[in-house]
Length: 154
Image (cartoon, rainbow, N blue to C red; front, side, top):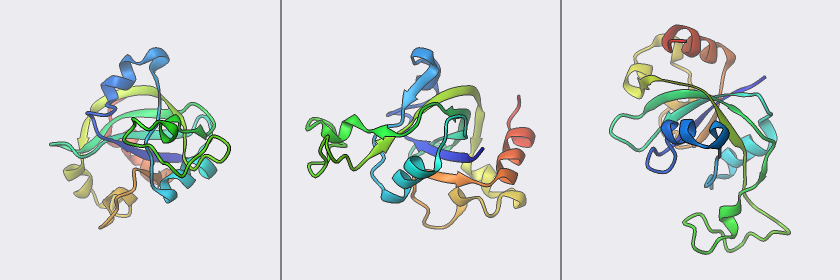
């Protein structure tokens, strides 16, 4: 089992949107970074743990726990000219972008980025690295364990 942190802008897809979605599952659309895509395409498996992270908002941070609920498949937004994620170089025969579905495990109180930065045990968490802009990043098992058992109530 692997662990991931997946960022979403709450206006686009929030933890509440996930909680209210059919089967509490959402397609993680719109990833347009090759490294983040490769994590989803090559690294994720059904059942992997996900820290659902709200980004680009007043108080960014971890808002809940989810799990990978599908194998990777083509992101349909790449084919839609009306979508902000449209990619004119992508075709149905040769898609460039993939997504996975994520399923809610539980919503948690927001664990702000500012608090994450103050915890020495999380110093090497990738989200805290200077210049990190990836929307999907791996989480080390020890960081997952620390966050889910010591920082986020069950």
